Image (cartoon, rainbow, N blue to C red):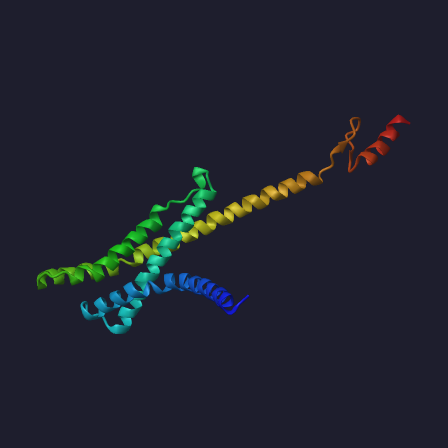
Length: 199
């Protein structure tokens, strides 16, 4: 193998590693963009103190992550549990995610619309109202995830119970005397017992 072939192999290996690293990091770096915009508008246009604006921007992005993560988790749960009584309502986490989108668009888009001062004053009131209500979808997500954990725990308990019952059935004697209903652990033991009835 010559120098150029070795170089091509090295480039292919490095390219694969770089692509894997980028596809891993980018989804985690992407929320930094709307988070910064949210921080900027809260700090500069709504006049919220810097530290509080940073905390609020991070809270909004984490809310979006938690909402969509819970929604996908619910969809997976429903796919694995076909019974209607064991399904969970995906509408709750999806509603929380829609609320996240409304907050982000309100803070980062509506406040930038080129209208008069009166419009911007009302826009600020709407933004503050949405941020005030942000704990509601957050609580919904917490309760939804707790509900899913309880359902998963019940499922695990049911499976463990079925497993114990099957093991119990396997341990029960299968060889029973037709005369006195003596239960033997093997056919040989039952044959030995039956000889006593023949005496």
